[in-house]
Length: 238
Image (cartoon, rainbow, N blue to C red):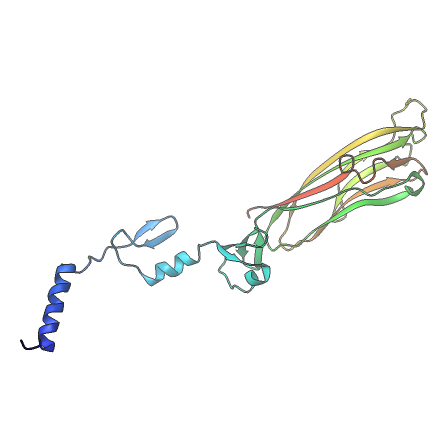
């Protein structure tokens, strides 16, 4: 039997293809899902533009922040750092952290003899971020106050500040008529909610203010159950 010619082989291949695919796929218009209006319909053809668009909406993963910074992402894109799990969102000027930032510390000791004037007993620095954020600040402090510190023109006080701005102040002086014992305890809780502008780095501080020697001193130094400053920073909208 003679071998089939090239023309005969081509005809056989055409016949097999006709059986496998009886006709060309119908060109189905794209559909809208969410914010994308060029999503391929079931059975439809894939368009390169759809693949490009949907890639920009994927939460991409990077091993570290340096690798993330190397990606020139479009505004609104999300990405996650796999070394620490932090989620980021691209804004016009850089990457804005979407996972809340948290900072905490135990208040330092302030002895009565060292408490004259204004003394920072703890500080936390909120790192800068290109996005808008809100800072939620709380502090709890246990003080010993002498009965001799009755206030007057310069009462002892505790201040909660951010960026040098006073947000809350608590009086540490005894009430008039307090028994003349050497010391008594005063538990002070303060809090503040502050909106942060884009690109702002802020110093949060708890300040002990007095002009009376041995008027008041911190108690339970180094014990976070007695003395602590905590800051939680969360992203916010425009």
